[in-house]
Length: 507
Image (cartoon, rainbow, N blue to C red; front, side, top):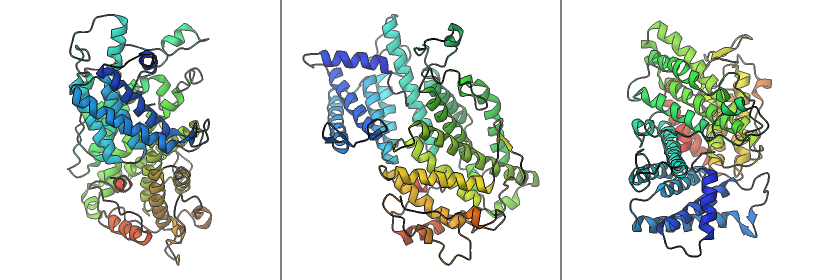
């Protein structure tokens, strides 16, 4: 899914590696690090629908995971001492190590791993398009050109991770834009598709198309030069949103279109539907990121805005909610494609949590502009209907998903605890004798927690307990008191947005 390696060429190298009688080259040792770290990362996705037990040949998955991680780290350290420069393989196994800790919710280590991979990529020279792995000129034969394109794809995949995580954590990216612009893939590796017309095959998406669309999404947002240090300006935020619609969306491959995607090849390319949902999550999450700072505006700041900006702010709140709904919709679809069962895939876990928190924040605002009629509102050319009922149901589904995944994932368990507490505060009426009664049984996997049914019990026009969205200073205090009452680790507050509360708990 992350396109770190090119599976066919990796398999060929793997078979050659096993066929060797004796390993004497550092490159062969480094390849062993790649194998062990792939194995360690792969165990994060077990048990699965096709492998329901937590053992392989009598050994527990946890033991296999720890052993592979330990061996991979020891080999990687030795190789770095023997060869400071490294190769593409080093970049790949560092990325896999970083992805492994991301599944465990260790956000700081994930960020450090991406930084380490970026440095390794530049030391190995895979960003320099005129040179080979060790700095020599590449011959122009098909094998070497494929190898070079695999380097480009790995570097682009690293750029996607760097762009997404830096935006998520509000940090400066490691890879400059111009490096990836000069290192875009040049080969079109068409998947093996049979029984379809030739003209259809020639227009089929490349196996790397989704990653390339994510690269362009990163280039788009980073190219706007947004500075979070200044106060949120509705007109600037609207300008960025309109540019996304006019400049980025028209260049999407038809198979990844937001409105009416071409699903002709979904059965012929099994991973295509999953890749589509991954891209949708990234696009709608970036819209959330664009509008999310409006939640930090205090009442006096809103009062100072010009009347037309206040009207714009109201519509942007609605767009923020709709984008969060679309993220949850894509996550639910992706999780279903995973079999609807246990997974530690961070894209599913994190993106179940953060949009849910955004929606709870918006739902707690008494004057939030929910639809008051049967008409849907436009978001990036699609109609999205957003009512209080729809929003709360989406949040409930996300929390139940986190509760189920909490059995295997500490990250999901922590997210479920935080989301459950905020859900209770949002939906419990002020006259409730025990506002936190809902969460009294929250422990362990949270599997037994029962949610109230606010839609059936209370009217949508009822004034729900407010989290004081407009007052940023109140939200942390409110949250801290909830944390202390329920004795789970106190998170550190992000300087920009309260949804990062959960992520910070893993630092």
